[in-house]
Image 1 (cartoon, one colour):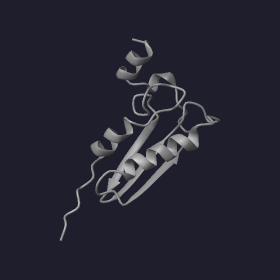
Image 2 (cartoon, helix red, strand yellow; image 1 turned 120 degrees about the vertical axis):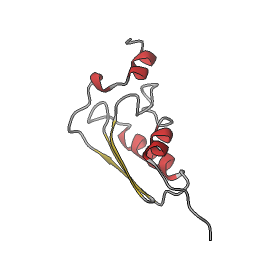
Image 3 (tube, helix red, strand yellow; image 1 turned 90 degrees about the vertical axis):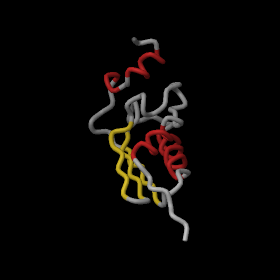
Image 4 (spheres, helix red, strand yellow; image 1 turned 45 degrees about the vertical axis):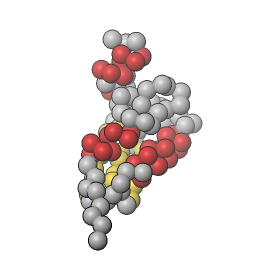
Length: 104
């Protein structure tokens, strides 16, 4: 019997570093768009937002996050929920993100 890998929040965070808003060359983690990551065995829940509620790329970003998380060994189910409360602001960008944007 094969033993499946245990998925961790760090595993999810790592793959989300490969998910970008196509209009901004910074990943969703460093942009501060990811509010919550929960892992329960093979089920992963991510709560995230967009830089603006009307962002036309919102569905694309959520789908890309879902696909990348789904590629993690041991993941059986993924839910990515888009929320707009609290609203995103520039203060949510990480220090690495600010460096990439030249804001440091």
